[in-house]
Image (cartoon, rainbow, N blue to C red; front, side, top):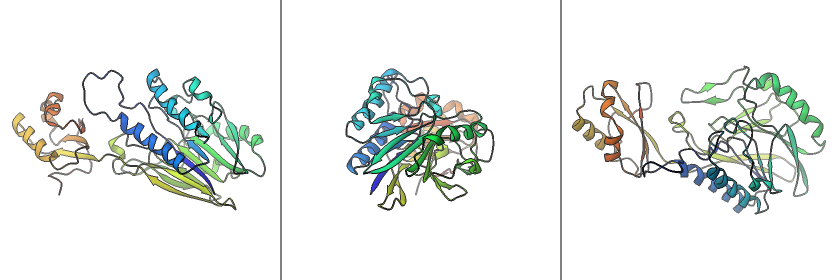
Length: 336
């Protein structure tokens, strides 16, 4: 059995200020914790390869201490003997920061369309891929496929890795579906000679299929990055190839903190009644909740300020305030 771990969209460094102006719980460690969990899972499960599908970092210009924090983890993991392949995503502007930490022979990342060749338990694997194409991928993708093709070995198991939107992928609470377009790869454009296609970029875990029924795996992000993802499972894929090179895969769910919408629905509030309502609404929530407050009447938003919320929201919670009324899964009264 050959085991591959596939994750993506870790967004490391998100909400991780190096010099915070005030002490409060930050979400940054949630992302690092789940990243560590995946790497530990790969070690303990004796994985043969780990693939990261892009957006390793949360933005292009990442402070050096955060880069080092991330790369130290990857370097330590590589020293365990398990190779790791990384696709630069759009958040990295399709190029990873340069570092000596990334020079370990078990660390591989795409700087151009290319193929990394592995022998895993005596079986040849070709892990093809390319950095995220941020504009006009529809027209550029056929050139990428043609550039990779000569480097694929005839008898190898072939995986194509990317960080792109693919036709049919769904996102958001309304289930928006990507259709053909300049920045979307068409299902018809996907090559037929791969055993599996792996992609990051879409934060909802899902499986698509090519015209010749090759699976396309999106693992989604490892943490909720926005309330639009509330309720989605977060995790990664464990992919197994048996002795006949038949492929199976399963989604492994990661722990995430609860995200809760709280609707403050009275038309008129005083500071006292607003405080009372908030305390009532949050008293039964899990202590580590991530809370979004929404005002039914936005005229009351001036009362919902940082000073008030910092004084009454437990330090174990994170909160944010939505400025406009819109449709969402609210709870107009205390949770049952």
